[in-house]
Image (cartoon, rainbow, N blue to C red; front, side, top):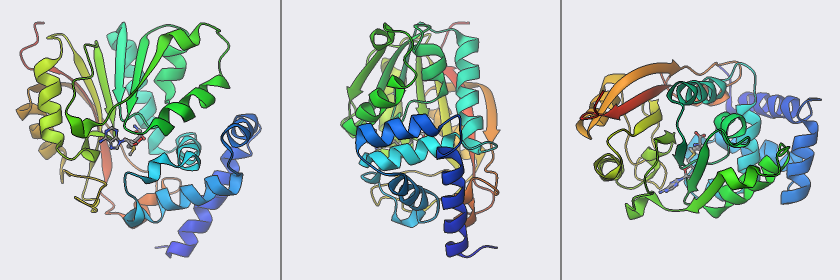
Length: 276
Ligand SMILES: C[S@@+](CC[C@H](N)C(=O)[O-])C[C@H]1O[C@@H](n2cnc3c(N)ncnc32)[C@H](O)[C@@H]1O
């Protein structure tokens, strides 16, 4: 059992390892100079994300350094974030959609770089905060070898609280996002009711009690995998594949402040009435 101070030191050391690694150093230098923050700001944001979870709320994501911290955490070898990113990519490769909409995307993840940047799918990335869009454009700029790439990625600033239908897409991706809207059940029901019969849905859902419920962070929580699956089922979805992303205590250091059974449930769903 580590003290908060010890976990904080570990987070700083780990972030430093990623952002100074030969393969990522240039990317983080590009983010820092373009978006006007320092490497120290990234480490400080990672400490909030990983150690002071009780301080987290939905406005903290608007800090650009927080989005860079997320990128650093997602790049950490052996992290549960890598399992989340890879599973979404695997599901999309299996589905082979023409259009994908990610809601509450936060930062562009692996599927955006591997499938959307080269025109493999048309991506629509939605977040309530325009900083996500600004960060994403700068971040992807670093990888942009295809001058047409901008044509395949569309951004929308949209708040799930408004219960507005994002439009028709082949796949909707929601990674750790639906629990952040004030009425997750109504949002999901609206999406399942209005989307195409053939639409697919990919979720990464936190399982385990995180706290901060109704304090502008999470507005719903699921104690068990079954509770989350039943919730999706009642909203009109059928689960067609599932995987788990389990935090690695060596690198997913936030797990030291949470119940050890916390994990993410990764689910591929279709509409219950979907024709096979
Ligand atoms: C926990 S982060 C998840 C980011 C990323 N999808 C991931 O898996 O790590 C939640 C994201 O949802 C966005 N968000 C929070 N509440 C929202 C809302 N009501 N409508 C749209 N986006 C929201 C935040 O700005 C943030 O980028």
